[in-house]
Amino acid sequence: MELTFNTPALLFPAISLLLLAYTNRFVALANLVRRLHDEYKRGEKSPAMLYQIKSLRQRLNLVRYMQGLGVFSFVCCVATMYSIYSDWPSMAQYIFAVSLLCLLASLIISLVEIIQSTKAIEVELSDIEELEKSNFFTDLWKGKEEKK
Image (cartoon, rainbow, N blue to C red; front, side, top):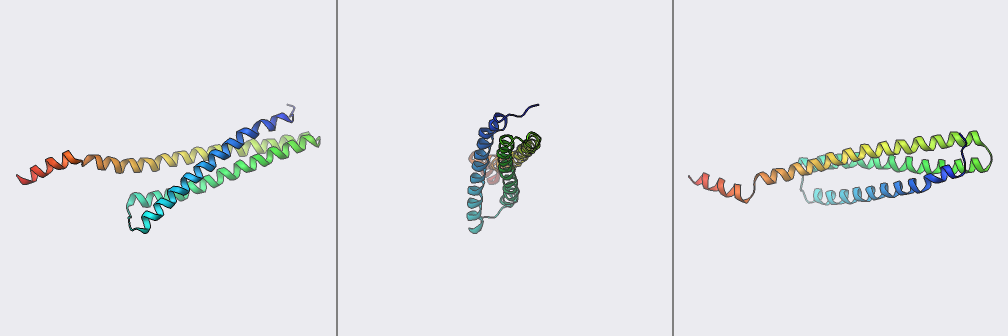
């Protein structure tokens, strides 16, 4: 397979969009951490909150690795283009392979982070389900039964 200048250049927009998505995830996590920190400082501690804090720490680490591998993949694409420009075809192929592997690893870590994110949301939903079990109408009927 012949590696041309356009092949690594095709990854530039894809990697850029991935890095933008990763940055958005980081900003959302940072906002959650700040909100939970404020709640924690006010003394609002619950088992769900402690789970969320632990989960957020793990997710922040995953986002760090996702971003790092994405940036390294981008750097490898640039190095591939330089290798092609310098007429080092075998070096360009190896560097491009590393770039693709880093991109693949970044996407796999992103999938792991998404799975962790959905588990954290399920914890929040379980709290809401507990609230739904005791609502105005069920509390009203419980009050009448207790009076009997």
